[in-house]
Amino acid sequence: MIDTKKIGRPRKFDYGTALIKAMSVFWAKGYEGASLRDLTGAMGITGPSLYATYGDKRELYLKAIDHYCEADACAPLVALEEAENIEEALQAFLLEVIHSATDHESGAKGCFLASSVATSIGQVDGVDSRVQAAVVHAEEKIEARFQAEIDKGNLPKHFPAKERASLLFDIRQGYMFRGRVGVDKEKMQNEVSGRVKMLLAC
Amino acid sequence: MIDTKKIGRPRKFDYGTALIKAMSVFWAKGYEGASLRDLTGAMGITGPSLYATYGDKRELYLKAIDHYCEADACAPLVALEEAENIEEALQAFLLEVIHSATDHESGAKGCFLASSVATSIGQVDGVDSRVQAAVVHAEEKIEARFQAEIDKGNLPKHFPAKERASLLFDIRQGYMFRGRVGVDKEKMQNEVSGRVKMLLAC
DNA sequence: TGCTTTATGTATGGATCGTTACATAAATAA
DNA sequence: TTATTTATGTAACGATCCATACATAAAGCA
Image 1 (cartoon, rainbow over the protein chains, first blue to last red):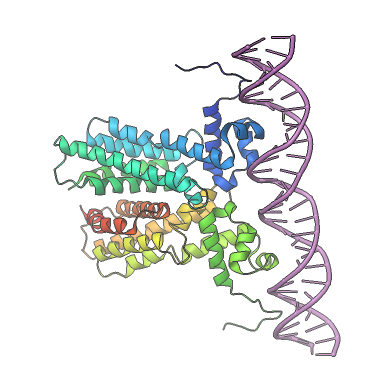
Image 2: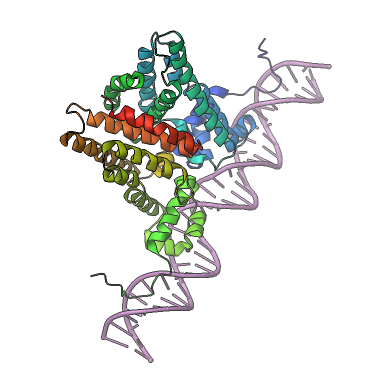
């Protein structure tokens, strides 16, 4: 039931593609560091098109954050949920984190939320609640995976699911920061198996 | 041998105090978000005084980063090194991290390097090397503390000092990010003792 | 064919950005 | 005192910032 026919002149660019380009600019340069010239240049559109389509700079920024939360941020969580057993799940989660921290297709390093958006917390209306929601959402997903393993009997009943979930999320932040700083990818990968064992120890 | 007598009109403000004020502004607003108006206003000086004393905006920024690395960033490391035994050392380190992430005297939240400076990596000349050096320095200090305990026989010879050092640093990053986001301080403190046990487990 | 609707490109608005001349003030040195 | 040195405050510079007015172009609808 998607009505592709719309009144008026059709836009020449793709909404989502241009939004991803905008996200890349914000990711690399931050909110204040990303000028309208940078944004329109990367998006391949003019200023008035940007304002007509996305609103002002702040609204474009919030839309970029929402896109990151829906697309990029959930990739490790998907890997966590899809793996067969919990050990493979944690391994896949961390490897996906390292991958996105060092080899993101946009060329930007680290985590968009941790390395760029965090700077605008308390500065740009609407950012705080989004970042807080992203943290809660991720930790809940991780905890749910642990709990599912407990319920299936693969982890002991007294396994501290909540504590380990927040620990895994903190480890994620550590990897993301090191990715931004430029730490060698292989150095991070070598640590993964040892950390997985720790996360599952009782 | 400090020669307090200097030729020329003496400056009306204290170099270090004003630098800390500048750091607070950069910390809260980021490099691009901190305008010269913001900076001079917080520092209590005029534009020309700022340029004559610290150089341009970028040089002031780098001086603020250096100050943070020498003063604030090392507080948890000092706590780590001064504590009697390794368990108390880790506890003190993490509590100091949480304290600085949530109750820094400047009013800013999180870690200056992780929450603000990270955004300017690859954007402002001189930032990359400073952040990389800070990471290496911190991990070396932590590893040295572990190694000292191994040498004293308080930790087994096969204790993975390097891996645990980088893990502790990643946990630090996690706490700092959550401080920036606004996670409740007590929630973080409650996790500390459990994490200390994990960090020392073999 | 108009009429309406939406998107585009040009061109520019006022505000703020970082930075610097310039003249003045306050200290030491001769 | 006079000369030298350094810091201060005012005032302004060109550049860039985000945002928008305006006229034009391209679609569906009547």
